Image 1 (cartoon, helix red, strand yellow):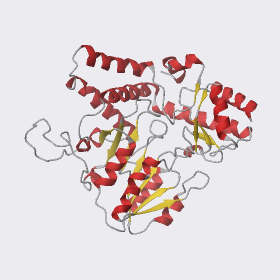
Image 2 (cartoon, rainbow, N blue to C red):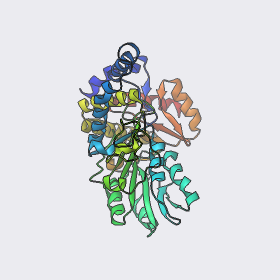
Image 3 (cartoon, one colour):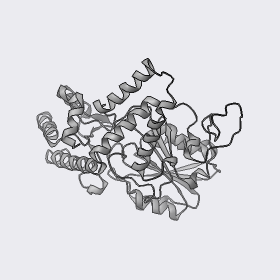
Length: 376
């Protein structure tokens, strides 16, 4: 399936909308909807109690996520969202007073609050200060101390669209024995991520943005080495090895990351993400990445020509993603005008944020540019 052919399976396009808001939430394709409808049919008309029937779908979704991160499926566990995924990490490690964590000042709060919450245990937080939306590795290096225990960063920053050099950061963390945690919700499905190559210890991601699934279905990756250092903060009946021996009550954890799946997960959400990853695989993740980056480069250049000074205009394509932002005067007024023209984007922290996906076209970008010319 080509990106052009994929446009046929997004029904909202028939309304004339230009949807550049995938960094917030993605539309549901008919391909995914059909799989969701099948799940609802089974739950409402046939088997109803269908847990075992959907185990192959769960296994397939886990395997597809593992492939996306270049790891084994037993290193993947489903969670409901990134916030809880990162809370799981923060609360499952042993902390001592004076331990330090490196964050940065342009992160989405999901990647901040779980770690700020550790200050009550005496943990200290060091913030890298971004420069024009960029997190520079030299600024990370300056904050490393012998007490630095963890660094957490987004693969792609939600405001600026800056794609971090995860491999360079991973090598730095590995050198200093620092746990390396990555929030992938704005990057997975947009740019390549390889937990082995980048020496990433922990990943928390979600499926409702660039992976085009449903809200409330996220995932984590945890390396074997890090798992050995974590004492699960929360446990449930599915955390243990002999989970269907219901009255045995032996708290003997599974050897895999599945020890972090405590209980019932959103099967409808897992169904959706499995279908969406299947679809994206048919298009090809390399094709999707090239198309998204090409759209971003084109959009950045066209916005720059209008004098709108996009945040990432002087950044290498290696550090671009699907997010393109700029900070105009009276951003709220411009945002409302765009909405009136059926151009769907986001208003964040005084910035207009566009986030086209792989199936969006240069023609749609030109339509947006044409409307902006009349608005500014």
